[in-house]
Image (cartoon, rainbow over all chains, first blue to last red; front, top):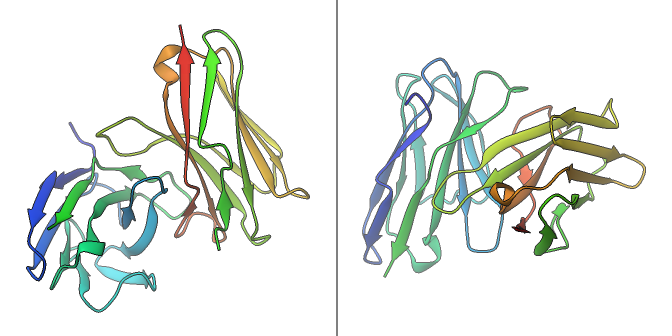
Length: 113
Length: 112
């Protein structure tokens, strides 16, 4: 399967802990996006990378959130000092250009207790 | 303030009939629109797109219509099949594909 993969699929953590998620995009895609989706809502844009450069960050991305794509391939999203409001599905998508379709991974469901 | 609205949270349609899913947007700068379908426990899957220079785009059973003056687009599925039962998201961008804004989704149920 050469689609977008995300790990872990589920993460349960206690408030105040740090968590890190990983996204592996489709190999030839140079754009990588992170979204957050809460119940009953559509995905909300968080940030995107073109190769290793982080080109845009949403105001939703507080200073507790950091994303990296060090070699322009996989990406990580870290949330420090998690809060219950961070509970959501975190989706990653990739595309080969800004006019091209974004292909989504299955998401990582985060539950903060 | 939601820039992309899908005012019907759910829709039920009989198999073989037409499904029409609606989407309204407020930002007149949006120039590229997509529809995604999402099954439970999976990420959204791209269905069809349309740019603001067109008013219609077809792909098999799926047709998207864009009315720029009304800031409205719709997705028509004909004929509807039980496998089409999913949540459908409308998304819009004002940079031809950068940072999409998604609507809240419409859950379509196609009844056999």
